Length: 268
Image (tube, rainbow, N blue to C red; front, top):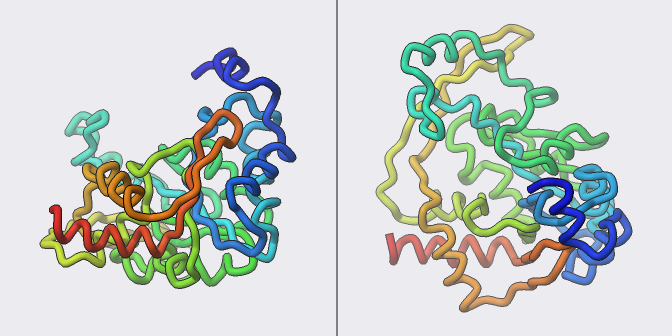
């Protein structure tokens, strides 16, 4: 979407104050633990771009709350299975041996959008150390949510997703839908499913040196995430409203995870 399209989608510029007010009208409250999925382009024209959205979200939850965003780095997945697009097979070993070590403070996100990429650099934001499935957090419980993120099963029981669940957190889909709702991966981990596992070798820093570490993950899928999201909304309360030009959805993360865990067991 071009800038002219963004201008046409709103009556007036989105600002920090207007976005904060709309988030509050939606139900975002001071002191809340809020896991955010976002699309900057969905909002229309924003004065200050992603920075303004980050500050509006911070204003809405306040320092007494905690703001969490996925800051995943798919550039550290196995290049031999990349498909969108694939890389030439004779590139794979070069990518594996030459890509730099993952650095939580420096490595950019990939495919996550402008808002989490801006958020991860903000003062007071901390980022977990998982080289593929990191999360960044700001606020009162930020350190606790991202601490001790294990290399294995990075979306499972010891992940920041589980920490948000333990704190009765909420999920905000800001111009996005269930296809990118990472909390559903936690439900996959909890469901009694016969999921395979895969191992990826990733470069990380240890004592200042680049070393290779293996990370094991369940073989998850997002194919039915929109379907489980629609089923959840048919049976549970949630809040929906406009934030800028975007449709925003606010829901309780534990309710979604619990529902999806049972749904996967029944429908997969």
